[in-house]
Length: 531
Image (cartoon, rainbow, N blue to C red; front, side, top):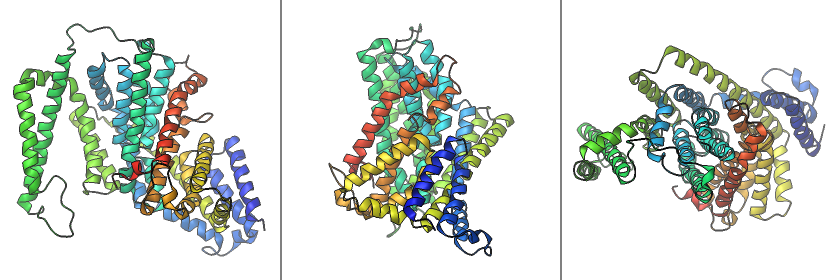
């Protein structure tokens, strides 16, 4: 029987060796799970009656993960992202954003970041975003003589925002493993995700203003509106969209009123924007929007603005369906993912872009991606169960707690471990293997000592740690030598752009990600402010 300290070193070194020789993470984890049981217990566990002994714990752990209802949302979100990538919805969104910002210094890079935020809020899939942005935005920026490092960093850093911005697949897996409310995780990650996106936008604007040669302005298009005229058209677009949206909300509130479902009942949450008391505000917003269209912008300018910005309508509808159904309490995470797929499919049919080939190709890609995730989940769940059975979490907890480090010292050590593991291992393996060990330690730490500029309520410590973990995984997507974003972009980048060039373009954005991570560690209330 091997002691737990020696066993921990064997597992760690073996994992790196197996990954280095090219063994898939799922198979490596499953193999080490069996090795762990054999070394810790005895070889006869492999030959005991089925359903008994330590091996049965592995089977139960895998079964528990595979039968979790929320897990169904993962292939649905992947399928939705694949449909978005193959249809013209993303292309039209990019064109609409580019119309409004084409004469802004660094405008295409800004458009790329904004588009990445919108796509992250639609599907939460990272790989597809980087590939799509690489296909759409990279040729544009290179053609206009944008700085190559700025173009590469913008695409890959912005494309990885799906880790933080709901509905994030990383947050879903964290919620599954730690049994934390996924809706609460989504709510908590909203502000940090947009904070990181704003860091990228501010960096692009400041850098291109300081050095205009990094982002030359495109040539003017004759007859294209500019200045105040373009601003009025954009205002008209917003006003017309608000009219449609408030009209929908009013019809919805009237529908609930007719059914008698929006009565104020003690102990029952009111319908968001669907109560009788909400109607005056909805009608007021509709009236103000109509006045803006008629007397401020004018119908002709509004019509032109609508044509220029209509590519944004479909993404807004998809975001509204997915996130709106979650936050309004209409559905759970899994049902919202299914509704998102239906919304994208119906929009594609209306636009006459949803062909059999697109659907079939999207299904095949979903099957491949989901298969990879499932195998990693099975292997990692087995290894986590075996290590837990061997006493690993207790050993690690005692080692860290016994080091006499202060609370933030313990958390910083964990952050460094996450950063190092993120350089070599996929986030799925990290959340499944390491989180069951680290989270119980963090929960036992004094909550009032977490953070330097504020503290976190003890109830929200698992949520805060999950958001911090996801921000850490943001860095892992860009970290050499195995930053997946680099390989995603390389698959669609021109031949003259090497992996070394891509990683060089990441450096300023990795610094911004670490800055955002520092904000979350120093000021925890930014995570819990909406909770």
